[in-house]
Amino acid sequence: MQKLLGLKSLRLNRSLCFVLIASMGLFFETASADDAKVLPKNRWRIQLMSSYSFTDSKFDSSGKSIAMGDAYKVSLTPSFVSVLKPQVKAISAAMNAEKPGLADSMAISELTADIKSSILANAVAAEYGLTDRLSVGIILPIVHAIVTAKGHSSSSPQFEGFVKSLTPEQGRLKAALNQVKSELSLPAINQALEQDLGYDGGIQSWSGTGIGDLEIGGKFKYFESHPFRMTVKAGVRAPTGRRDQPDQLFDLAFGDGQWDLAAFHYVDYSPHSKVYFTLESGYTAQLPHTATYRVPIITGVEITPIKAKLDQDPGDIVEAALEANWSFTRLLTLSPKYRFREKFSDHYSGGNGIPTKFLSADSDERLHEGILTLGFSNLPRVRSGESSLPLDAQVFIRHRFGGKNVNEIETGGIQLKAYF
Image 1 (tube, helix red, strand yellow):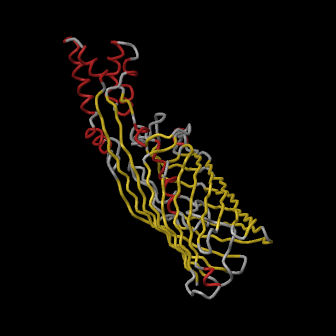
Image 2: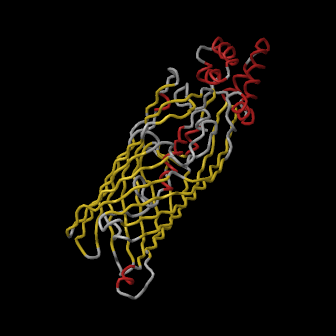
């Protein structure tokens, strides 16, 4: 219910889905390990990645971990409700006449929601070695997402006590307050969202299946001399995935709706035949675009009757990662990785002068996460002539352990790679 009465955490539409769908790692979010290696000339590699992710919590703007439903707790005071229902303004004035400021401080109802989200992401990627230094590739994800949303609305004890304290002479005020209370039940709120504010539904669950954003890019190895190897990787991300729909409260986007350009740099360092480290750094430019948005009119409250076509300049992204790779047997490798990501604030303009500052609030993001990958490679057996099936298989888990304005996601998955 972030679009409903201030639920800010559904910015996971971009931050959640994009983390889950990227597998080959042309740029942006890497599903598991990536390093400075490139494919040999005329060699193909086909990859299939499947992962499952779950979240019911987020890191707020101060970095505190909270349940996603905690961000949806809203006290519906008469003054607050009067913004969405102008007919309540007279009731607020009558309450303030009884006691100054009462309409601002006393909640009629407490609105809460329980929110959980899960995503099953599958992606197919193809890479080809143009030369021994340059490889190119493409990736297309297919995503199935489920958001479970359960809303609750109950009158506050303070409100019930105030209504009971009203005298018979205040019967009209008492009747009006009880009428407002009935209009703040969950079914009534859902009805108002659809009929009065133009939303497609109220506080209800959602699910969907579709493709994500298409990614095309390449890697160029510009230096290799033991114990170092250095590579640059760059690419473009096309907005082929579904966008977040402004008239739906709990849908998830499978893409971020604009073209992106990114470049990464990798340095491999191999101090030992069975151990090497990868230092990764990157920058993603999210290009400006135009789309239709719901424009909040109250700070912290995204549910709004105002809908406008705006120009958005999304914040760019910088990130860095450090990974260790240990081949503890001939065919098995263990790879722990730490990753840091920082996204800058979004900016909006247009809409014939409609104030857009609330859209930009808390749009900056930061995350800290750990990824642990266990990999199997049959390539040593192929090179020695013991096998003719060149393939890799990996299982990985990802845990976000810190950040701000991002969801606290747990992910597990597998990745298969075939060479020919």
